[in-house]
Image (cartoon, rainbow, N blue to C red; front, side, top):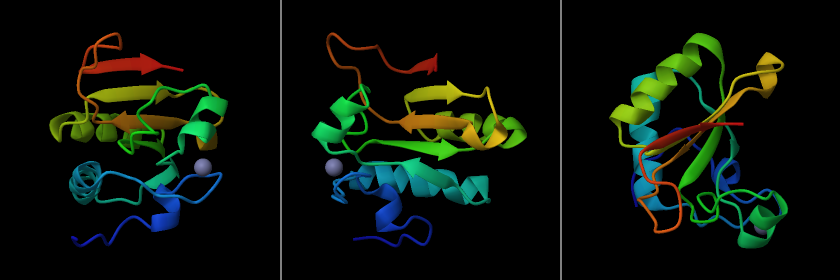
Length: 125
Ligand SMILES: [Zn+2]
């Protein structure tokens, strides 16, 4: 294992069952981003078990343990997008409307999968 001073198991675990199959490589990437970001990163969703993910009608990146949603807005969101790109996150989902507290960025490091979006890519909610 490796040193993780930043993210708690319960932050990265499934919101319905508490299972945590978050990928080590993605967590290491996330830690590199966090160290450069140098500010708290509030994770609102990490690993999701397939059943929970289907309920949310979401892409497979959370169920693969390779995605987080980070509550962040405005200037910090601008900076986080830059660092995430530089550290190799290949999927960036942007929700930056509505109340400040509801704004977030989705970050994942999936590779290109046939039939899915080519990587790198960006989308909005
Ligand atoms: Zn679950």
